[in-house]
Length: 213
Image (tube, rainbow, N blue to C red; front, top):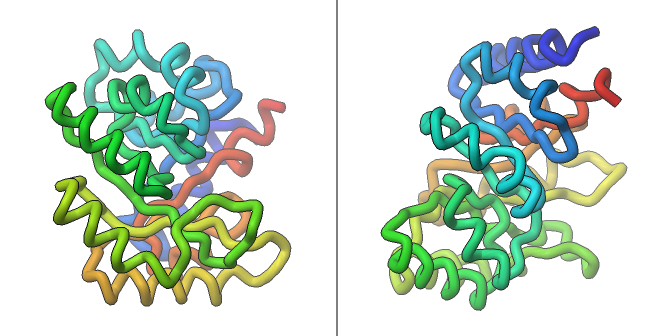
């Protein structure tokens, strides 16, 4: 099955569950020739894990196609923020105070506003990034009111090889308590569950590009 057909199948499956779902097509490691057929279908939202790869792959294209929205879904180090803020429209991995302060300063310098999801370590896993659940309310309020960042909602990556629904529902509850309207949960292996748990943004890569490997 072709990449384009994989994309169309997933789009159809996702939109049956939620007609307003935002699909972020994750293009890390993909050559542009594999991405172009999806762009030609009118898709506008694409995700990358690494700032430098995104700059090399997308900089020239978005100069002439300003409707494209680039989403950073990977870990962002503060020393990469200067480059990230120039190319990304959405950052899904805001996960610490130092990074938040850096981004707020760079927004002013670049006269540019970015949309953010705050990454929560919903499974309290030591090897994963993210704000502790107990600190989420304080951190969201700090980012929104003190730093004036545009916080859309929360994001998480649940523990592997277990039912994701409990973690997704817990994040949805936190999101609702904060009166945030967007939720970035769900990837190739669990996007249907995520949509049923209230996701607004799903991040799909391997399920679309598996035939290109």
